[in-house]
Amino acid sequence: MTRFIKDEDLYTEVIERVVQAKRFVWIGTADIKDLHVKFKNSTVSFLYVLNSLILKNVEIRLLHAKDPGPNFRNSHDKYPALFKGMERALCPRVHFKHIIIDGEFVYTGSANLTGAGLGMKSKNNRNFESGIISTDKALIESIMNQFDDVWMGKFCKACGRRQYCGDPIL
Image (cartoon, rainbow, N blue to C red; front, side, top):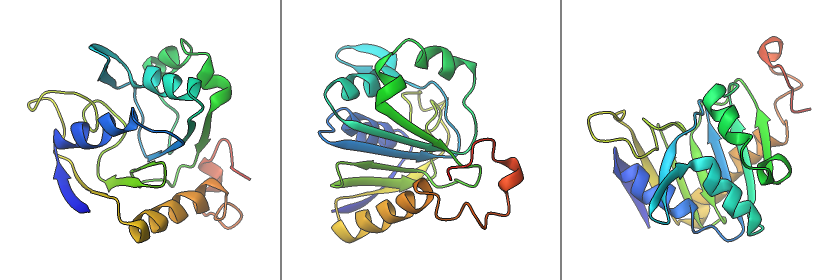
């Protein structure tokens, strides 16, 4: 299955699947904010969801291009499992937006991990976003390879943006 999705479908087709992860969730995004989502009949920070997954031994990797703002950092500090259980790497060249769940589902598209991108904003407050979701093994493998190459620092030694990287992966 491979499908094009857009706008509010990003939330229902992607974010709601993250909650169901069993083994791992890899998230790549340029921008990251403290987005909010529906979870067990309430509205919570997405970081609460990630914290809950970590407590179920789900591996979380977050690769992003810039430091998150104060709302994200304040929310992050409320969930102690995130400190040890969520791996984070910063690469100022990351502009892709990927969410990979258990190596069996992938989203790739335009939306950042923000309320207006992937969060539960209303039609009138969200960005116009689009992407592809898929369970196609070859597509998932290609996206995972791109994510992993950056995650492992494959491009760090020859990176032309090294002076902008506050915390090089290598």
